[in-house]
Amino acid sequence: MIKKPAADIAVIGGSGLYEMRELRDIKEIRIKTPFGNPSDSVLTGKLSEVRVAFLPRHGRKHAILPGEINQRANMWALKSLGVKTIISASAVGSLRQELAPAHFVFPDQFVDETRGRVSTFFGGGIVGHVPMAEPFCKTLSEMMCKEAEKLGIRSHLGGTYVCIEGPGFSTKAESCYHRNMGYSIVGMTVPTEAKLAREAGFHYVPVSLVTDYDCWKEGEEVDQEKVTAILKKNIENIRRMLVKVLPGALEAGCSTNCSGLIKTSVFTHAENFPHKIYKDLKPIIG
Image (cartoon, rainbow, N blue to C red; front, side):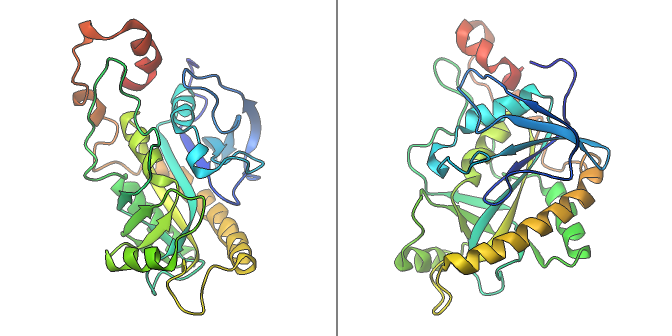
C-alpha cells in the first residue's frame, strides 16, 4: 500500500479511451495485487489541479475481453493508491429512441446478465453482503450530468444498464427483449465493476457513451464504421467533461453513503477471519 495517497479520483477508460492527454506530471505505476495483475499499469498525474489516476479497462492495447477483465485487481490497485472516487466511462448501445448515438447516459440502476464473472472480494472464509439498492453515487451522477449539459453534450440522468456477457453483440431477439423489459442501454462491463467498487467503499459513477441503437431499430443496426465515428466524438466529449467536473467531484457530497456501507456488511466475526484472506482484504474492509 502507498501511505501517501497518489490520487483522489480515478478514471476508468473504456473502448476508445486508452489515455488522458490532459494529465500533467504523469507517473506510471505498476501494481501487484493479491488477485493478479490489473488491466494495465496505472497513470497518475494532475488534471485541473486534481490528483487523478487513470486505468484503461481493456488495457492500452485493447487486448482484454469484457469477461477477461480482472476487476478485483483493478479495484484493489486503485484502493492502494488512495483513490476515493471512480468515474467509469464505457461505450453502450441504446435501447430507447431518445437515447441517440453521441448522447451521454448516467444510469441509476443495472441488471446483470453475465455468467461466472468474479464480482466479490468475499469468500474463502470471510462473508460479506453489501447493499446494492442504489448501486451508483447519485449525487455525483447528478452533478456530472448537469455539467455535461452545460458543455452542450446531450445527456440523460437515470435509466437501467443491462450487462450482457459478450463479446458478441445482442441478437435482434435479445435486443427487443431488453427493450420490452424497460431497460435503457446495453453494455458488457459496469455491474461487476460496480459491485466490487461498493465493497471497496468507492464513490462510483458510470458514464455511458451511446454509440449505436444496438440492433432493435430497423435501418440502424450496428455498423462498425458508424460506431467508430461516434466513438471518436464521444471520447472528445468525455475528455471535455472530465476537465470540467473533476475539480468539483471531490466536493460533490454523497447521498448514498457509498464509503460507509462496508462497515456493517461483513458478517464473519473478526476473530474467525483466516489470516491470509484478511491480509489480502485489509485494504478493502479495513
